[in-house]
Picture (tube, rainbow, N blue to C red):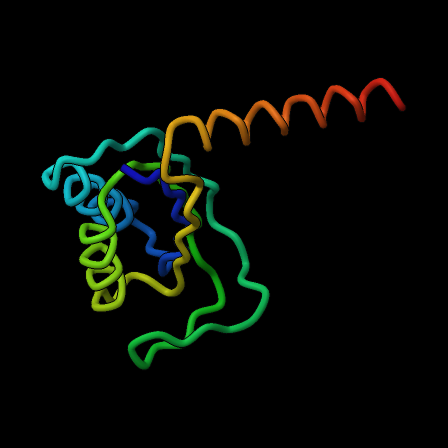
Length: 122
């Protein structure tokens, strides 16, 4: 099962229940289809680099969050459909981290070796 990372920018609301519900809905969609959610991170409310318009409403602030998950490509397509239709979502992108455990593990080892090498040079 491929491993993915999704970055999502949502409309900012004073009450965080809207974001919490969207994150819960996204995670439950992946898990109900037999996938696994590995990590959820909330990056906070930030001023957007430019005004964004989605579903006819212009926004200048957004809430950023990420989700690391493993799921099938069919589930990913349906998750993209959910994000496309949801009025709370301003932008989202999904990165494929790898299709095998070895790919993901090798990538993290290379990053660690590169970081260690950078520390030695400094």
